[in-house]
Length: 210
Image 1 (cartoon, rainbow, N blue to C red):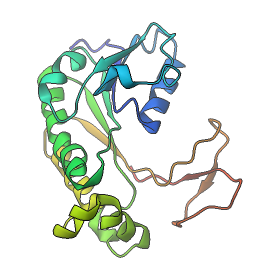
Image 2: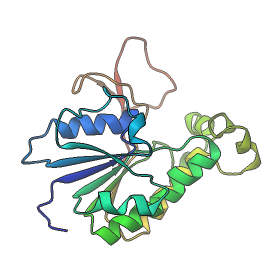
Image 3: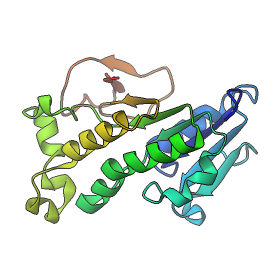
Image 4: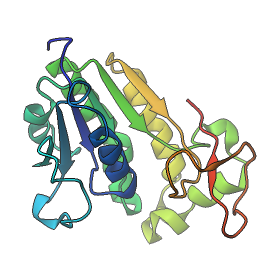
C-alpha cells in the first residue's frame, strides 16, 4: 500500500462511537482524508441521518469483523482501520470483542494496512479484577444468562482480544476509554478518578489508558 493513502476504515460505524469517528474524519479536509469506509453488517439498516453520507467521501459498505472475506476489499489501500465494534451477550462478545481482533489483524497485515486502532475499555487488564466497575461489566449482567456457564466475562474477553492484536505482528494502537458521555467537541470536563456515576447535567471525559 502506498504510504500516501488517505483512506480510513471504521468497523462498527453504525454504533455510537463508530459514528462519531466517522463524523470527526469527515471534518478533515480532502487533503487529509480522501475516503471514509464505514463497515456495517447491513448497510440498508443504517439510519439516513446517522452518518454524514452527504459527503461523497463517506462510503457505507458491507463488512463483518467476524468474516475475513468481507474485510479484504474494504481494507485495500487503507491508511488505518478503526475497530469500534462490540458484540452483544456472551456469544457475540466472544466473536467480536475477542476473536475478531485476530481476524482484523490478519487481514490488515495481509493488505498492508499501516495501523489498526482498537477501541477497548478501561479496566480490561486483570490487575483491576477487584475494581467494582470491572466486576459489574465482567458479570452475567452484561453477558446474559449464558454467562453463568463460563468463567470469563466481557472484560476478560476484551483483554484476550487485545492480546491477540498485540501478538499478531500487525502495527496497532489500543485505546481504553472510560465512560463515554456525548457532548460538544472540546467542551467536556476531565475527570481522572474512577466512579460509577457522574453529577447530573455535567459532561465528563473519563481518562483513557493508552
